[in-house]
Amino acid sequence: MQVLPKGFRHIPNFLDFPAQKALVETIRSIVEQAPLYRPEMPTNGKPFSVRMTNCGQLGWVSDQKGGYRYQDTHPKTDLPWPAMPNELLKIWDEISGIEYQPEACLINFYDQSAKMGLHQDKDEADFSYPVVSISLGDDGLLRVGGTSRKEKTESIWLNSGDVVVMGGDARLAYHGVDRIRFRSSRLLPKGGRVNLTLRVVT
Ligand code: SIN
Ligand code: MN
Image (cartoon, rainbow, N blue to C red):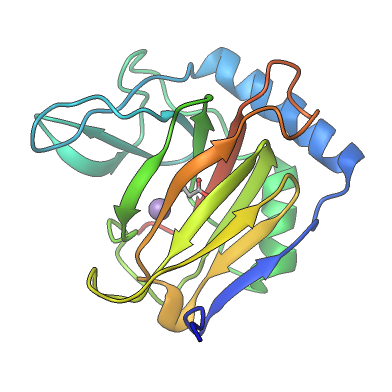
């Protein structure tokens, strides 16, 4: 039997449909100011299949020249990231119970064929803070393993409105998204999956 790492929490349907709809509208207005773009792999400059943007004081970016990092401006517009909306701070408060607020929200958009390879979130300064991740739109198949790449992995489907917390021993768990179930949700009229990850960075 496989067991998800300790500190990994999956909260199905944390947001009901009206709350998901409202959050999509908020994300839409953020994307209007800070457009989705394709980051590049640090090693070979290959573009990600997932498109990304951010909100909050800091945003996670990646390109061949600078590698994985956080910065306070959008790499294409050079403008500061839009502010973190209150809706997201509220979710962070409820889920994490941590007084300190997240500085970054990475917004990932998966179209029909997008996926994300197995990786650890380790560009932050202090791993005692959890990562809180919110899924919207089409179902995504999340693969979760241990803290070394060699360990066995387990896969779970994340549906619209689900929240995942990676804290404690799971904070540095390897994870990735193998595929989405295109058009499995009616939240986004054109289909696709949005994932929001809230993180304390500094
Ligand atoms: C991520 O690791 O940045 C995204 C995970 C997900 O899309 O569920
Ligand atoms: Mn990640």
